[in-house]
Image (cartoon, rainbow, N blue to C red):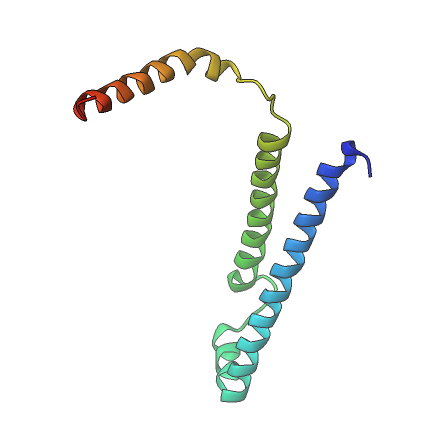
Length: 119
């Protein structure tokens, strides 16, 4: 595999495998929760109390919030990807502007520590 496609392929494989793992863990957790509720007899009581319909807020709010959360995670993932792999290797404008100040501050701290330790 060429170097050009190695990073996106690795990233896509990682994202897809993570989604599959989270999906499986979530499905198992819900299956355990519903089976415990069903066998204890609490599931029927909860179902009757909620009176779930397609337009119910108990259905729509988790649906819409999971969609928003998925897009937010995708957006943050893209930001992290571009920050790690697509940024320039040299310092940007922020680094060029503040690097001298930061280096002077570090040198001052080092000299203060040396003076404090009696060096």
